[in-house]
Length: 341
Ligand SMILES: [Zn+2]
Image 1: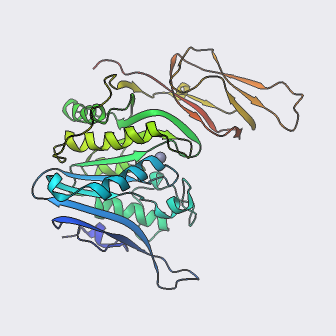
Image 2 (image 1 turned 135 degrees about the vertical axis):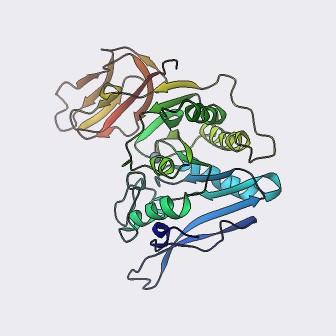
Image 3 (image 1 turned 60 degrees about the vertical axis):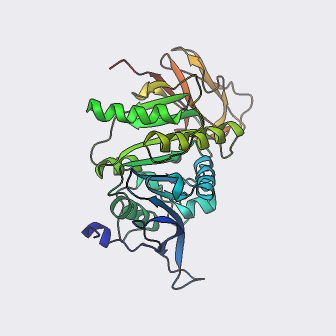
């Protein structure tokens, strides 16, 4: 029985997500345009179900230019059979499908950033409609949601998992269990947004679904290392929650370093437009006052570059990829070790 909010969505899923077995299909988003008056946008979706067990939703392509999760979920879809699982698995590999098709973070139709759009609007722009459907029609009823991000075109991450801080120690421990199961070299915890959080993780929490996200790689490309972590991490998550009945590749023995990103001094921003030259790479331990980057000026190459410094002792979690930068672009994100509870 659909909730009143779900019933307001204009999107229709052409497979039954509650049925047993494996099915592939599309979420149909009505989109009337010049070349197709009565057409719809086909957002791929897959269901695999086998009796009672955990109910898990896996999402990628929330940002269209983050490829690791989209590729790895495709590989999972191709190989997984109902006999290998207990419970229900629903996979939405390219959630912002127009953005994914354009290879962009945001949708080319309405410029919408899906992960800043929840809870969306059932009669709003294309991206707002996707968000509304995901929050109100898709999410309710799941035990877990996993949202597979990476740095996208503009950022490159030290492969990480990402979770919201939870004041309830039992729920926090459950989230950290998921984080450790994925097996990324680092994880970072951020303060939970208030009820108005616009991300898919915030939407999941509003709907009572335990959720983590990833930031694996980025730069608009994938590597053998980032794909191995993404594919292995997905299997380890599914095994950890008791859905996947097969063997999962072991997590790296080095474990996951638990960190947090807290405070404005965790970020280095470009103070001028120019060419960004990083002076350290991701994974580096830096000190307050240490040179972080130079910004060079093509229009006036005789001008001394601007030198930017780190504002705290920390681990470099993420850096900008492209050299051209504008004032206000994020150049680095830093993390510090999570204090013991
Ligand atoms: Zn993202």
